[in-house]
Image 1 (cartoon, one colour):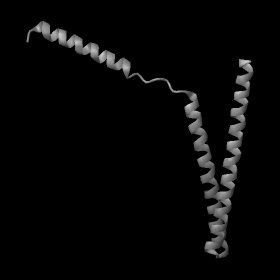
Image 2 (cartoon, helix red, strand yellow; image 1 turned 45 degrees about the vertical axis):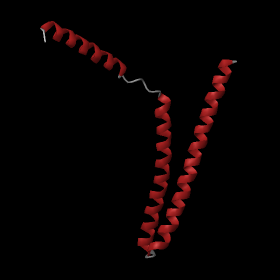
Image 3 (cartoon, one colour; image 1 turned 180 degrees about the vertical axis):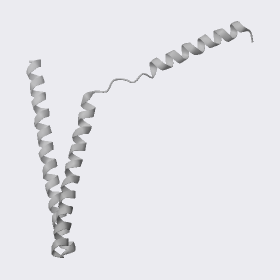
Length: 110
């Protein structure tokens, strides 16, 4: 192979690499994607926190009174109910915010 052929092949390779780098540049993400994930994690954390607090209170009271499974189960179920209620409240808040944003967008369009 001659030196000119190698230079030409090297230039072609560099051009292909540059084209591949341009094609692989990441596209910017929308903020909406991340906000939806944050809201989902918020709901999960609210549910787990309710369960955890209920479990902790039930276990502590059972240890205190010596009735191990009874209050543990009761307070865990109450914690689950509280977590679900908090999740539903958050979902309602999100729905109202979304509807308000859509209404404002419709008012701009008209």
